[in-house]
Image 1 (cartoon, one colour):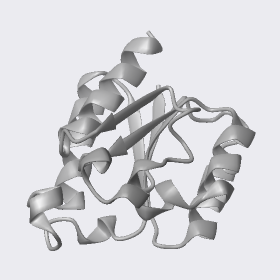
Image 2: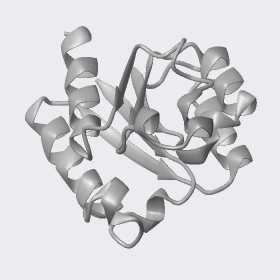
Image 3: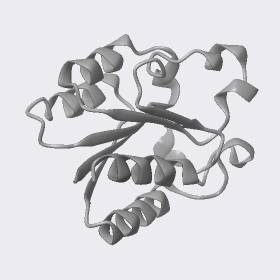
Length: 144
């Protein structure tokens, strides 16, 4: 199994910003934990982070050939604004999981709407960095 993890804007600052919402774990630690978990389940995992919407769209489009089995995406603020990323995910037809470290529904009202949730295989929010691991495990189990 091959899985791509995409992180959107400002997630490169995890561990340095708003620890009350995001905790103190940094993106590198999340990626290391996911790599270990994927290896335990004989799966391959790769990572991509960008603050630029078009770069995320380009990354998703690379896999229109079906060379990956699932996408785990934390779109960050693009959750509430990006029809372009939504369209790219739908165009490639790869099952995807939407992950948010914080509970977006316990935050500002503008964060309550997602352009991805209605099409995602699963949505995990408010469970901290563990949400990535839950999404990874579900993707692996569904493809056995």
